[in-house]
Image 1 (cartoon, rainbow, N blue to C red):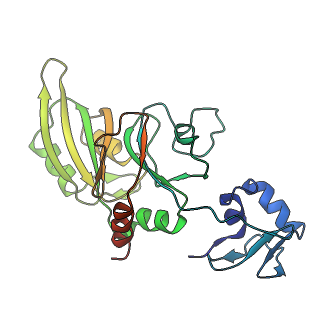
Image 2 (tube, helix red, strand yellow):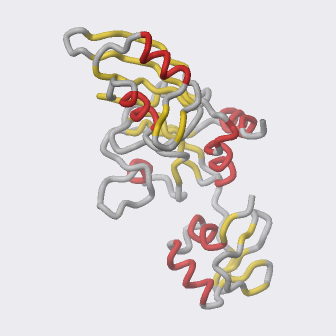
Length: 240
């Protein structure tokens, strides 16, 4: 998979994206022995990239399953100074990036890796990777609301694809219903917007599964490394 040169340099931990761009413009970066000064240049994993004459370090591939708490943004850095999910894996020497996003107030399963090809495949809409959420919503959704969720909901950026929706329980004292919602899309804040659109705003949201992976044995704020067989299964999913 081709990636922008400055991104490859940044991912290798040599420089920030902005500093990498400066290095390229200064003529200090070469690809397969040729100086490259174009910011739009792209390279693949077989290209030899050097900075100041030194090859980029080749980091080992790392795959992590994190149980994200609320109150963290799913980015590498945040201009508002909020806590980021990278702080939860800061004891891992490799520079990791989230696979997709969970919003600030959503908790649950988040994959993190430095494997750009796998990230691209798992987040590409054509792959239809299933993501399961437990949404605690206000009120008790009736047949009409549930049918809308299952058939597709009209949002500002278009109709959602049909979702799998199961009612788990209703708490009459709090007037809150727990729904299990399975989607394969990745629209921004999709589950929250779907539920709000049918008149039942989300009070609490957690992603419980990503594809075949779940949170078994991983407490909130903690993580574990994926096994070799789990990584192989994920790679098989993106080949479909």
